[in-house]
Image 1 (spheres, helix red, strand yellow):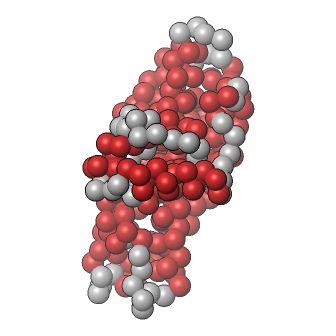
Image 2 (cartoon, rainbow, N blue to C red):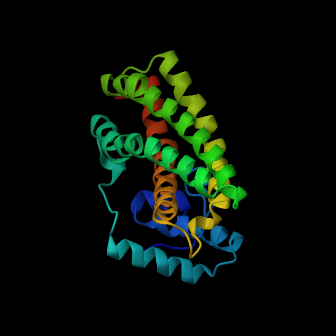
Length: 227
């Protein structure tokens, strides 16, 4: 189904369910997706046969499988990005930020990592909120109209350059959240926060992957005058 020489990004494009496998092993499929499956496995100390088996199993289960975004028209791709990433994130970001503040307030005196986590989550929510707004108001209408002006293109390129910083922030959040594993004594709010952060990480990484490996090509095509 997949082979060791395929890039990580191409695997996720072919089967979005595989994003969960890469997330579990902390393999970056969003900004460093040009790495081969074999090289990614070696970096994480995994057997390539084991990794390929997990990818094949995830594809068969198809828990998160959606349409092949490469085959969508640009208006369809914009609609997909809005419904599958923008809208869920816009609902989740304020909830997660408030929950991180609550958990930090209640437990932070005894667990300093939760204070650090609250700060990192707040920073991520602010930067992502601006990013989503710029895309929705400037880039998406321009893409659908088939004319990306200089301002929209500049915003998209700036966002592209910021992707590595977002991934680094997500790594800081994961570290502060102890790989999203709550202690046995954790309250329901504590456990809910970690579960929501794990989902948030996967969704943001999937959005960045979509922007880097699909949307960016559409922007270049429109700027270049392609249909």
